[in-house]
Image (cartoon, rainbow, N blue to C red; front, side, top):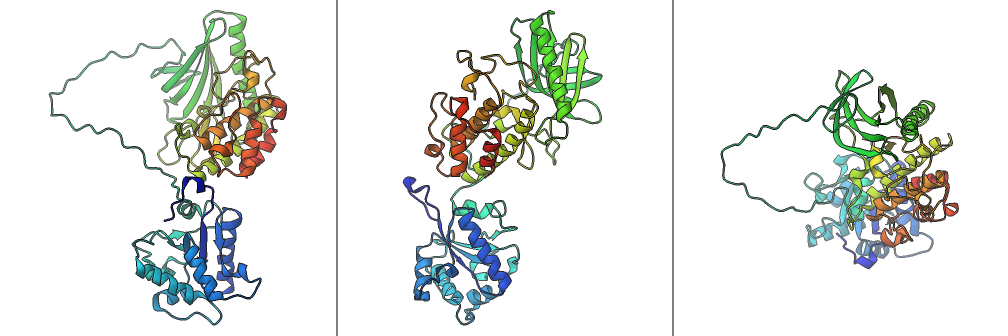
Amino acid sequence: MLVREPDEAAVPPRVFVSFARDSVEHETAARDFATFLRTDAGVDARIEEWFQAQRRDRVAWALQEIDEADFIVVIASPAYKRVLDKAYSAAPGQLTHVEAAMIRNILARGPEEDLGRILPVVLPCGDPDDLPEVLRPYSTTSYAVPEINLAGLGELLHVLTGSTPYPLPPLGPYFPPLPPEQSIVLATPAPPAAPDGVIAAGAEVRIGGSVYLVQGDLESEPVADHAAVRSQGRALRLDRSHEHVWLRQVALRHDTSAAKDEIAALGHERDLLVRLRGKDRGLPSLVQLAEDGHVTTLVTAWPVSGDPGDPCGTLADFVPRPGEMVDSWHALGQLRALGGLARSLSVLHATRHTHRRLTPAGVLRLDDRTFVLRDLGDAGRGERPGEVPPDYRASEQERRHGGRAGPWTDVFRLAAIAYHLVTSHPPDPGTPLPIHALAPRVPARAATAIDAALACDAARRPGMDELETALRG
C-alpha cells in the first residue's frame, strides 16, 4: 500500500482501472465507475479511453500506467476472469491481455508485497464469482460496489485514501488479575426520594400522570434570582411503552418575575413544537407539558436505536479528542448530516425564533447517521447577553459585546461544531485558523462557508440556507 510523506497528504491517489470490454453495458458501467472516482471522489483514476487524442504506443502506455499507479483496480467480469486465470487473449484491439500479463507478473514477483496494491472490484451489475482466482477473492479482501455513489464506494475509498472508519483505539494499562479474596457485600441506603415531580438523577418521578426513571447525568442551574431551579435530563417512561424522553423542568422556589419567565419559556417552547410538528424530521417531537403544582416539565421524545431499542447517542459521543486524526470520509458524512440540521434550524428561523444554545450534546444521532435537535435550546425565552456557556459561543452572546443574537448566531454555532468535528479542535474564540490549515481534505466550498460563518462580525456570515448548501456538498 502506498504511504505518502506528511507534506504529500493532499495528493490524490493514482489508480489504473483495468477491465475487459465484455459488452457495451459492462464497458459503460466501468467507465461510469472511473468517472465517479475522478469527479466526485477526487481520485486520479485512469482508463485507456481518456487518452486517445493522439496516436501512441498503446502497450507502452499501459505498461507505464500500471507501473506508476498507486493502485490497480481490477473489475470483475467473465471475460477478465478467462484472460487473467487462463491467459486467453482478449478481443483484437483490446489491451486486457497485456494488463492481465502485467498483473500476473506483479503477483509472481511478490504476491504479499503487492496484495494491497491490486484491488478486485465487483460493480453493481457484476458477480463475485467472476473475480479471477489468481487474485484469491475468497481468502483476501475484495470490494463490492452496490451503487455508484460515495456510500457505495465507501469501503474502497477508505483503502484508496489509507483511512479507516474505525481507528484502532489506544491500548490502556494492563492490570493483571488479583488473587481471589473473600467477597465483601456493602449495603448502601436507597437514595432519598425527590420532592413530588422534581427530577433527580436515578429517581422515579411522577410527571403529568406518568412515572419516569431519570437516567444519566442531570443538568441543573438556578435562574437569575435563585427563585427557581432549571433542570434537564433523559428519562425512561415506566409503563408498557418504555418510551425514552428528554425532560426540561423548572421547579419554583419563590414566586418572582424571573421564575415566572422561566415557566413561561417552557410554555412558549411547547407552543413552538406544536406549530412545527411535521415540518421537519430534524426537529424535536412533543410528548407533553405537565404542570404539577410548583413544578413545570416539558417532555419531548428521545429517539431510540432500531435494533437494541436503546436511546440514540448524541453528537458529543463523536467529537474527536484534541489532536486526534479525523477520518476524511467520516468527516464528510458528518458535514452532510450537519447540512440537514441546518435545514431544521432554517425551519425554526421561519417562526422568528432562534436556538442560540446549539452544542454537540444537544444534537441526537440517529441510526441512519442523520441528526435531530434534542430540544429548541433558548428559543422559548428572551435573549440575555452572557446567557450561554462559553463553548461554541458567538461574539454577540458575550456579556461585554452587547450585540443582538439572531439566525446568524445559530449559523456561527453550527459552523463551530463543524469545525471541531473535522479538525479535532474547537475554533479559537478570536481568529480561528482557516479550516484547510488543519483539515486540507474538507471540500473547498464547505471550508469557505465554515470559515465565513465563524466571523466575529455577524454581518459577514453566510445565511443558514447558504451554509446548508455548502455542507451538503
